Length: 453
Image: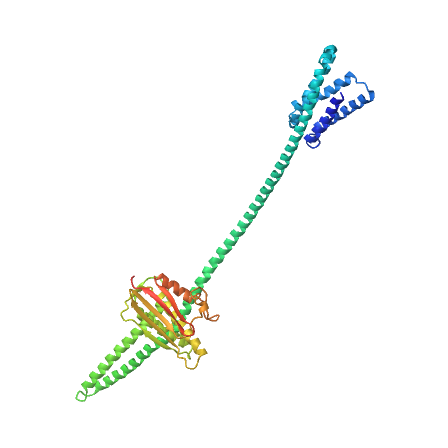
C-alpha cells in the first residue's frame, strides 16, 4: 500500500510539472491537488495506525485506477499518456494480488513467490520506463525550447520583414516623390533651356543687326551718291537740250546718257546688295522651319564674317582686326539649313574676334589681331575653318568647351550655349565640329559638312 500511495504522490507531482496544469489546466490541477493530499493523508494514517486497513488498500487502488482511467480517456492529458505504460503493469499486478488474496488466500500462497518476482520486474519496468520517459520529456522540452526559439526567430524575421516592407514602402514613396520633383525640375530646366537658347539666338540676332546696320550703310551711301550724281547729269542733259539745235552737243548728251545708265546699273547693284543683306537678316531672325536649301557656303561664310566684324565694331569703336578669307572656288553648293549654319558661323567668328580682342587688351604693343575664314572641298566634304591668333584655349578646359552652359566669358557676356548648340547643329547635318588649339597662339574650329544631300 505504501508503494501504491508513493506512486500516486509521485504521479500527481510529475503530471502537474510536466503538463503545467497550474497555468494551462486549472481544472485538472485542482483534481491532482486533491489526489495528492488524499494520498498523503492515507499514507500518514497508515503510518500512524501501523496496521493496514483493507479499506485503505482499496482506496489506494482506486486512486491508481483513477489515474489509469483519466490518462487513457481524457484528451487533455494525452501528453502524459506514456506514463500509463510505466505504471500500468505494477498497478494491475498489485490489484490482481490483492484480489487473489481476497478470493483464495491458500492459492495466493502458492503463487506468492511468482507474484513477488513479477512485482520486482514491474517495479524495474516502472523505473526504467520512468527514466526513459523523463529523458524523452527532457528531449521534448529541448525540442520545444528549440521550436519556441525558432518560432521567436521566425516571428522576429517576420517582424523584420514587415519593418523592411514598411521601410521599402516609405523609401519607394520617397523615391517616387523625388522622381516627381526631378521630373518637375527637368520640365522647368527644359523650359529654361529653351528660353536660354532663344536668348542666345536673340543675342546673335542683336550682334547681326548691328553688323547689318553698318554693312547696309555702304550700299545705301552708294545709292544716294549715284542718285545725286544722276540727278545732276539729268539737269545737265536737260540744260543741253534747251539750247538751240545748232548749239547742242549730241556727243555730250550721249556721254551724259551713258553715265546715267552706268549710275543706274550701280544703283541697281548696290540696291540688290542691300536687299540681299536685309533678306539675310530676315532669314536669320525668322523662326527656323528646319528646311534645307542648296547654299553657297563661301558666300555664307563671307557674309557672316563681315557682319560679325561690323557688329563688334558697332559695339566697340576701338575694336579692329584683320579679316582674312581663303575660299575654295571649287566648293559646290550643299544642302543645309542656312539659318542654322549661319548661326554656327556667327558664333565661331564672334568667339574668334572676342579671343583676339582680349589678347589685344593684354598685349597692346606689337600684336596684330587677325581672324581667318577658309573653305576647302575635299572627298565630298566641305571643310570650313575659323581660326584666330588669339590666346588659345587653356588645355585643362579643352574637353569642356562643347558642354552646355560652360563658358570662359565673364558673367553677363555669355550663356555657355553657343558652342554646344553649334556642335548639335553640325551633328544634325551629318557633320563634325572639331577644334585645334595651340595655347597662347590661337585656336581653329573646323566644320566638316558632307556634300551629298
